[in-house]
Length: 286
Image 1: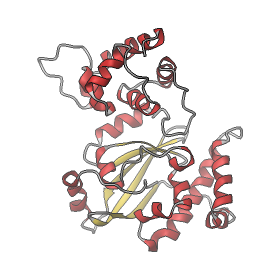
Image 2: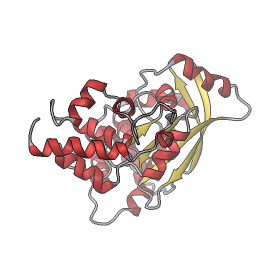
Image 3: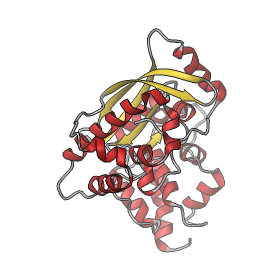
Image 4: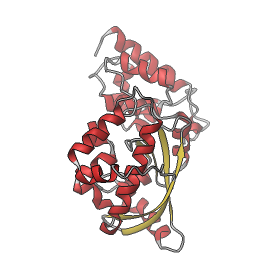
């Protein structure tokens, strides 16, 4: 990089990691710690980057960080929305639009997510774009960080990609389709009239999915607040879970967490996720 902005980027990263208490992000504040906040290797770990790469960023050197890496750093360093925008500008990247995969995650939701260390949990937008997952959620549902554009929304993939529906038993597809459409109608209505993101997605789905168009014509409206879901895991098979939701004040983000359904063997199956690790699952649950 090497420009004045990238030098400022490095200084900004150093200042932000210095203010975070290790305990706030799950690290032990031992007696031998010599820095007031996080160490560089801890930020790298939280952001999923190598220590050498992160060191280069703080030095204002190395290659220009990707938008995905900047989003990970913003979450690791608990940046406010203004700080996140500043980070992108100093890195010479366009500030992400609201609602995309790199959207700023509500800080309170991110804190809660990090405390759910053994419970699958993730933060999604009201259009079912996954913003961040904890490791148990990745193990249960697969890694959702690679989707871009319209396909970042699971609702969009559900109606346009048959592979996305493999996460549910076929017998549940009709119920899930109706629930997704009713939820999308409710979410779109809560958005400002000038907001085109939801309208563009709905228009695209109406053009590309006859089933979506038929269900949309029914005018059903219902936000998904809690569900009992049957999920098909590639190794563990059928897992029945309760999916609970916590909404942000503006309704644009939701923290989802998954608990074993009472009367099933799902508790033991969820415990096995830590042993099995992450799986290559098609798409997220919304």
